[in-house]
Length: 306
Image 1 (cartoon, helix red, strand yellow):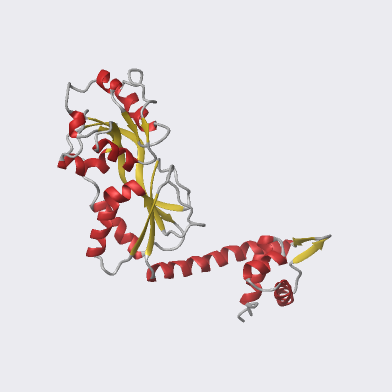
Image 2 (cartoon, rainbow, N blue to C red):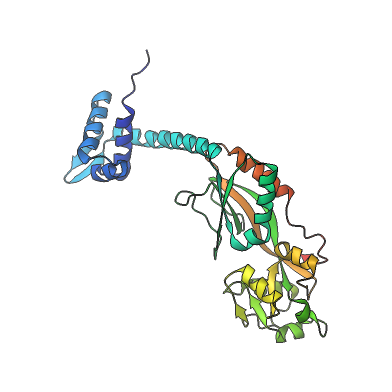
């Protein structure tokens, strides 16, 4: 015989009430009345033939049976929610979050080309300034994100590395002119920092052995890599940039390399997305396309110092 299932509305009301430990909060979450939650739970208890809650003074507590049922229902409703999310993702635009400088210097053009090649796929891009790249898939409206980091992401995320960050000093052609660039000339130059903690100049100088020769804490401070590169292009000093994101300007000659050493920062750009459910087809196609159209750093004429 097939077991007769309790009503779904009663199971849902119980699961929410068990999660909050309150009929009042469950009612607010489900947009129904407290008495309706109480009736639904009573219906479930009558259907199962056992109590699920007990009163302890003014507090509501789960019985042992109620605790077991709540744990299983939590998993079951999460599976249902993920299935619905997966279907919606297949029907709607893929929502992508990405850092602002990466967007302007590579991703925007790559996505425009992707959508020309794949007109059936829709990607909704949100470019965001982030001091430290992050995304909260539970509370932010994104299906995937591109983040700069070490790769130590949550265990319930999928991830694929796109490319490494290589730090390299850049300046305008006018700023480049003069005596050969040495540690002494760099020490006298106006440094431009694309972050307020000056970490990128410090990393580069440590790797080339000049951290004691150059006062890396002095100079102009900016909030983004984009602003630092723009200030350097306008002749306001020498900035530190990401080789992949300045490669187009280097080939055009609007930016120059005073030094030919690029230093790996230890960070990389990753495409990340929740592991729960099936990967949306649009995301799979976009991932493959981006991996085939990464920035070209091979023609920039620099030595890569790992």
